[in-house]
Image (cartoon, rainbow, N blue to C red; front, side):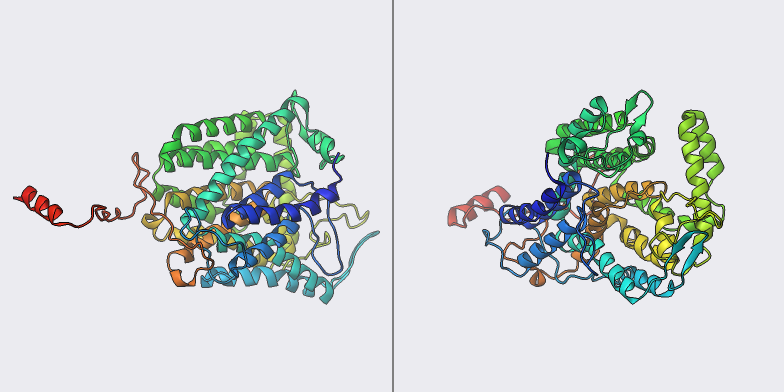
Length: 506
């Protein structure tokens, strides 16, 4: 059995080793993906004012330090022009004005929310204290650390090489993780207990019918489900991008989809059934358009829900036809809690109620908490208000909405990452599935907005190379760019060469 705190701090050494033996893009993806999938949950180290150090924040901080080292040229030199070296964008903050504005508002809004929530809330015997400048500073710093994967993805993975590293990282890590998931499908969710000595969530939440819903080392089985859905989409898309490995990618997609079915995650499975045909059969242009439509729907979901434009009754009716009574009851319970939480959030619509459970609903006499927060959107809007919600979800969706302005210039790898992200966004409506991987993909797409106009002279490190031009594929999966110019003949110029060319012309 491994002590959870030892495993957490050991990842600092693992990250340093990864950046020493791998290229920067691969090291970053391996660091954040490995930490998310393998490190223990509910294990943290708290310091005054500083953000909590856990499996999400500590790897991001160490990866930022190592990335800064690479960008400064201190990293061990590598051969110039090495294949797959990738491009590093200059600076740390987004270059696009809209993304930069959203980033600043997302960081500052949590602090402003704390400052305006200085009143004490009393619900019978339950008291929620008011917040002050100390809390505001701590929350701003915590949000900045939360968004570090966004900045790292934007800086390190913006070009074609970086995007493909991220895609293959998602596909391969999920394919290996599926073995652990299937073990828990058969033997029950016990790997976290076997390795770290505790259960990250209630046992009853992972009993489904006559079987089990796996979670491996994640916070909940629902997060495992959406991760498998995203990886399935990536594997399907890679089968069209990398024709040499088409069969391998299709086999990986079938393996991941089968694991998803056996994992008993109905919501994630529904999202997969909706988007897998998009990844397999639609062109790149239609893929990015579909991703933009879904991203826009998620961004404005609170407004659509408040205006009764979301067909909630029809969704419940569909579940009643094809689902069990327990799942129908769970859905109705979630919708009821969303309504009461949204009603309370609208009492302070601009900046919300801040943290420390001030956004939850309590019985005014007994002080008992009568609400359950599941969806990310209702949590964010309750804590940071509409301003914080539009900023945070804007960072996740606006890069896709800006890319769709020129759909013919979008590469297949970019469209595929957008599809994986909107699958995650759709799952954030009913569930709390916002993770560092979500921010990493969003940052990669934000960097794609800058990568095309980033001057080559501004790229850092000795391994700077231009990203390869995506190949023109068959079956509607064209890169939708002009074909590359023909290369020059390798034959040296001689008199015999010239005479031979003239004889062939005439």
